[in-house]
Image 1 (cartoon, rainbow, N blue to C red):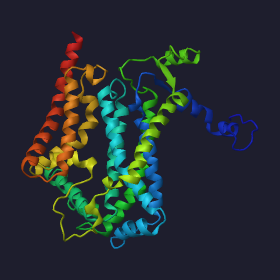
Image 2: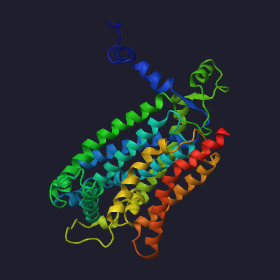
Image 3: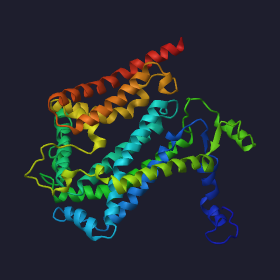
Image 4: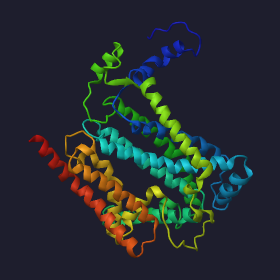
Length: 415
């Protein structure tokens, strides 16, 4: 049996005897080592965690007044919360802006990992757990977009749920055909009360629980291989941490997470929050589609249906092609990032600027996704349709070429 010493209830010693508080602090903070040669982009993880906290807190306040009913949802958001509840407008602006900004931070975090090769050499699970987080955040965002029950919410829900019918019938060629899959998801033949309440449950309960679990898993995968650094240098964390603890803090290549690196995190977080609250108070409209301020009407189709900006790139990959090829391309876009550690065949861990052809691959991919995002918001007509089609083909081609590009890089290194 463990030995318990007398201590004041709920003091640090009392808690330490029961839940190993000092061990937990040592493992997660005081003896968790971070490379010195990293920049502010490595703080995006902390920024994401804080933004998720803002979404949780603001969501709780909105939940107090929101009505998950097709007859009351629109008014509960646009009238009750925005006009009757004191500071209700602030909580809605905070929630809406955070829901958009969180994806901006996610994309910065993703492309930082790709640029510096932070998914390689034992860090595959870090990348995979991060992509699981991206998928769960996407599901959370989509379920939340439906809740105001405006025109774009209704029709975006109609279009996205219709995709499941295409996947079950066309793509799987009848092998895994689920009759009535779309109706099962909606709870009815068309978006209505059943669908709204189901997506409400997903948004406020199931998806947040999954996201919290995925965040814990993601931080857990960071603990053993540690984070990457700007040069892709292999660091002996055990030896370098001994140097640091012995007093050679300048000579050591690592610093403590607490408070050395955390102070840098907090500075970057302060800059981010300044930018975030500027958007909340002065430019919140970018996160709120004007069409969605009209009540949902199943008999009146908007002239141009599109998702939120953070889904536009994958939507544009679906749109230019006929139904079946489009569904294949869309499915390809959803899973391909998850496979990056296995498609990149090079053993080189270095910034993209020092990786030959991969440098061009990275920048073409980044520019191509920006083009896809812009084209996804525009009507698929004339030159816009042509540009969107070319950009979608380029996206698919880049990922097909990646193993060959990186295999060549590997051969070059071996020589």
